[in-house]
Length: 525
Length: 113
Image (cartoon, rainbow over all chains, first blue to last red):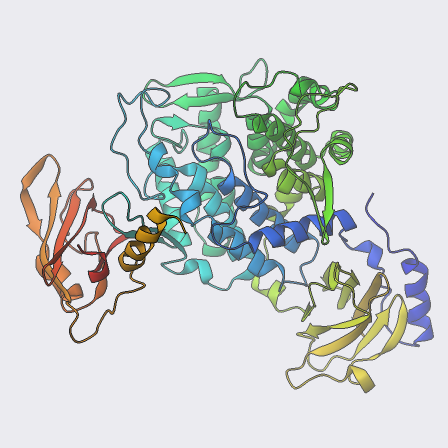
């Protein structure tokens, strides 16, 4: 249950009167607020974003059937999860989220992540039907590999929408360095800007006659053709291009014509083989959840039409533990868990509150839920075989680091809303908070209400103990008198006593870290 | 430290440029010997890009050479680029690589042998 700031309603009205000020009633419970577990999820992602290059602790997997494993997906999903919280929960607190998102994106350009493409580019007889292994190529963006560049595009374009700092417009925004000295043809560096990636992805949709961009050569997976469209939506909003608008209706028409979704079962196919125009296999809950959670943003009618059948097919299977009864003999057990995580995220995004609640509760009971230094996550477990009560305790890192976190953060249509309501330059000129001492302090709420000219902030103790701290309020409107309230009680006006602005115009607000406190900085007109 | 690592680490260090006294007066510098852009199907009809690469690299201890259409404007999309260079008596190669407007190869005396 979303936490309510206990006394806020009564207190805020009382405060307005006791201060004798002409301020509108501002109730912190009217604005989004992160729960303790959600803050814990974010702290976990922040920690993973700060690991040293090459340190992938808590991110390993046994999904050896998939050449790229899951690092690039974990990183991009965490980046957009952080972006979602930035956009929808704490828009007025950016100093934590901006570098975290950037670091997660930049980790996708490290060799441990992208060089696996070199194997995938070689195709082969098994899936690509290319005749023997081909020479392949090294550049991970130039052609195909939508399972990397589609996620770079989504995360990079979301970062660009949120922060508008031009970082991903630069020619070397995504720099991939190939530096082995033990094999190969010498060091080579590939550099791409976000506009480069967007244009290449768009051109590949066009070149495919809008059937979808290939992953490995000759192979189109339906799930990896969703996030590039979302990335292009954000890109178009910022650049005035029409890439996504051109792709969506044509790709949708081909989706039905090709039959990416089986009309009988509503499951997606495993993949589409381009050269023979074959639909191959059925993907199962991992791919169905993966595709539909994102597709809900750009084709909600389709997802609403297929979701009831998928729910019927999968939900009870998860809640009874039946999904983990048949384990692969070697490797790929983590795919069992990704099915759980992807289904949970899909259920959340489509607004199936009952399924979402049950799946999160199942995860909290069974998946080695871990509180550690303020982080909350589900530590990887290989204990997949159901216990006597029928519950599986296995959990993979993609699910445990971010998929269940996304299910918790997304109370229905969260990403649909993000893509429909992009930030503009005006959003970055509103008052916001900064100079938060991250180890000692958590910010569960930071929202500027433009209509009421009110900044609403809720602060609580972080994992490192301290008695007192402070935060700064920046970009208050010149010439406006602001009243500051703590837990509904006026503590003074900006400009008076301790609330005197610094030379740069910011105001420092003192905080006692003895519990959760809500602050409102509101124009007193 | 294991015996193989004891030998390997100095080699790695030199190869990656950490131990190179690049730019010192008595240190050899890059001379581009050859650069060509060619189609794999017809390697004899190559575009000579030696002058362009030399302009970027000659006399430097290390440099980057973009290997896109800056070297051969009319080259086919599937063309290859190959460079050979020397630093004194030591020889280095970069490529063959795909012609790629987003790619640049690194030439460095620390990488020659």
